[in-house]
Amino acid sequence: AHGKTKPRLIACEGSFHGRTLGSLALTHTPKYREPFLPLIDVEFVPFGDAAALARIMRDDVAAVFLEPVQGESGVQVPPPGYLRAVRELCTRHGSLFVADEVQTGIGRTGAMFAYQHEDVKPDVLCLAKALGGGVPIGAVVMTEAVAALLKPGLHGTTFGGNQLACAAALAVLEVVTQPGFLERVSAHGAQLQAGLRRIFPEALAVRGQGLLIGVQLPSDPAAIIRAGFDHGVVVGPAGGNVIRLAPPLTISGEEIDELCARLAAAKAAV
Image (cartoon, rainbow, N blue to C red; front, side):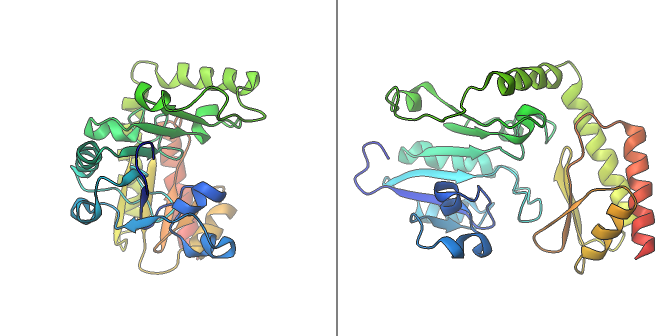
């Protein structure tokens, strides 16, 4: 918002950025928003539609927030060129491009960060979840130009910089940056997608990047998800009758075969 008298904020339909004040304002899902209205004003545009964003972009836009792949709304992967178009629009209008990679960052999509699939760079990057490998930690990474706008002491957290969490994050980064690790994530993601297509030939779509995958079914998958738990497979629901899978990045090919066998048995039991 620096230098903009009445700054506007833009986020995407279907987005999920969190459940507290600022992040909740950027979250599009009504069931999360409605108990806490009124919220900070945010304009929402269709995800993956660069033309829709271009129609409302002006120089008064402070920032555009998006997930490079939307998880909560059903593992929505944008069309090729979308992130590049967002980057270009933000640069043209002097707006910040903020990438929320809490779900997609640290190797989940087969790249260290999902925005790298289009060889673009955001101005601000939000990380958490996988960064600590199960230990609670979050990080906000920004360019030097954005960091220069923050005065020392302006932002802080009670438990920020916790030594144990930071040590866990360093250990995670050491593993994820090993040669061949991200390539294995991509290969195992392709293996899992192929297995899911065999299990669910009726699926309207099997989509994703790396080991973040969604299976869109013609009807509510709740019964299959419950049966999966009984068969030792933990999967979750996402928007639009989608089963969301996000197995550990260290999963092996043999374990993917076992996952698929158990999920097939769960489906057969419904």
